[in-house]
Length: 89
Image (tube, rainbow, N blue to C red; front, side, top):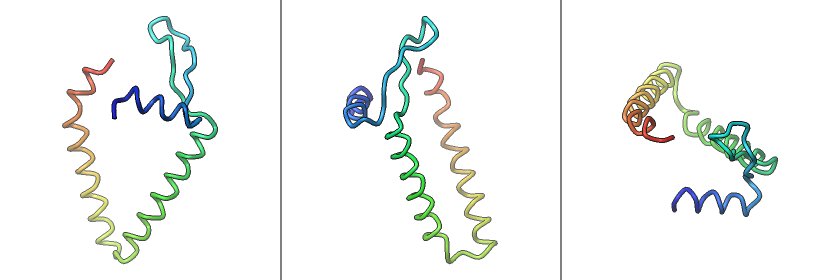
């Protein structure tokens, strides 16, 4: 689904709203509504519960190793996306 379609869907669900921005080059600002903030908080909480469940059996060494691997993956993915980010206004 395209970004505009997602924006419309989230807006229709009461999760986001469009406001007039302060700068002339950015006349509209997309932000979360209170309902959207609550939905995001619920997603974060569910993610935290899932992560705790998935890692409950790891010892300290294994948890540290997993943390290092995930940090490396995040670094690699961030570096891979960097050229794309420069093209987005």
